[in-house]
Image (cartoon, rainbow, N blue to C red):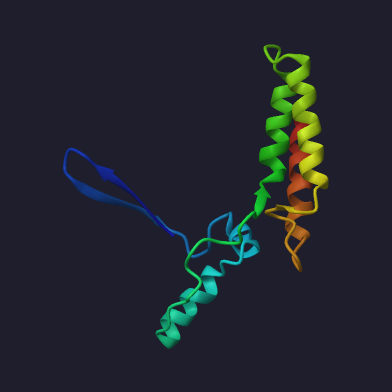
Length: 130
C-alpha cells in the first residue's frame, strides 16, 4: 500500500510511506471470496489475471466487531443525549449480529482466530485503564 498526499498549490504528489503488508480489512475480502494476495502473485509470476474480479458473494455480511462495533455501542450507551429505547435497540442489534451465523467478523477468520482474541484483550485492557 502506498500513501501519498496531493498538493493543490504545486500540483504534485508527496510521498508519505509504503506499507508492505495488506490493509486491515483483508480478512473481510478473503471471507467474501476475493483473494487479492493470491491474484497479485499469479499476475506477477504467471502473467495471469483472475476471472473473479467482479462483485463478491451476494448477501455477504461482515462487521468489524472489536473495537469498532463494541466501541460504538459503548459510546451510545454512555451518551446522555441518546434515549433509552435507542440504547436498548443498539444493544439488541449488537447481540443479534454477534450471534447470527451468516454475519462474519473480520477477525474471526478460519484458521487464524488469535487476532480476534488479541483484539478483545487489547480492547478490555484499554477500557480498564479508562
